[in-house]
Length: 256
Image (cartoon, rainbow, N blue to C red):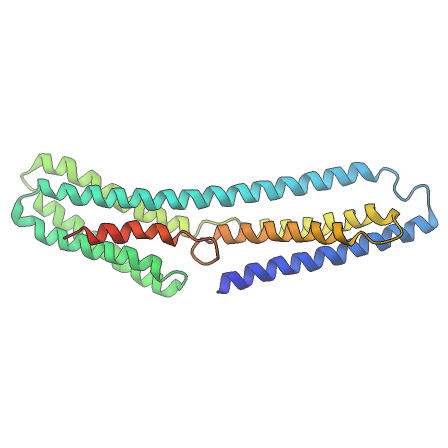
């Protein structure tokens, strides 16, 4: 709920701020027009186009980056399931007497991997579970090396699969914490306010306020920014990837 509250607060603050700045822009234009009716809007179109163009680019790149990272996180889940499943199947190349211990370690490893994502976003609990993952990884590697002594074909098959499995674990951990710097969101917020002020300035020629357009503009921008924040944190907000973790659970159920 923490991220949902933060995202909603960010969107509402942007919405309210844009309304206020649009009104400020309108009042500024009306005041200037009272003193200089002919020059109040002279040459403003160039600045308007530049600011709105920049604002659109920032929103587009921010949204595109969030969507790309969202898709990458989903693909990493699939890749991890495949990597663990492949490594587990390759245990068959080991001598029969060495397999039960490794299979049990694999089951404990997968249990910990599942718990990492179930405990998110509790940072302390996730960090503790990741430490367990690292210990089990070390156990699996040690057991695999001991089991493969004298069995070169097994080593050529199993060790690369284990390396890939451990690498995916690290990639997913890094992907969870990979987000744009706060300065990007601050710039987006600031540009939204400036764009709203320019829009209010440009609509000041009319005697009455165009509330429908002002509110619609502010609402659309605020909703887009909310979605960007939500997609950036797919385990805390409304748009989630938790359902894909079912593949890990199903894999664990098949490890008999």
